Image (cartoon, rainbow, N blue to C red; front, side, top):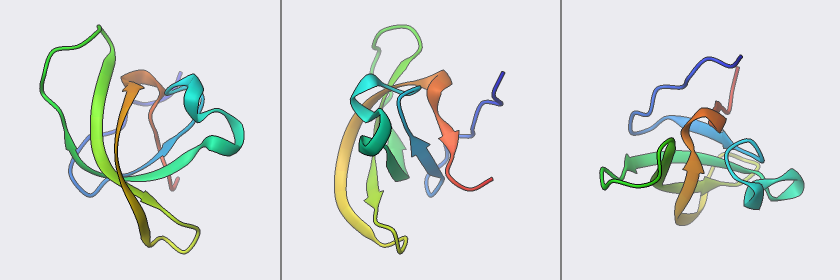
Length: 77
């Protein structure tokens, strides 16, 4: 079982298929968290707001994504 990541502003996360099928395989993201939306949603799911990071670590796009909490992983181990 994976350790649950801390969801603090500035955290860099790997968003892959475990977080949501829309991010499976080549569609996976490296994501720098700005904030977690506190509105109620489905159990175990979250709306995250942040920046998609490019290969050099520079922000390339701001996004809001809907993901499974237990599928989130740190981008750097």
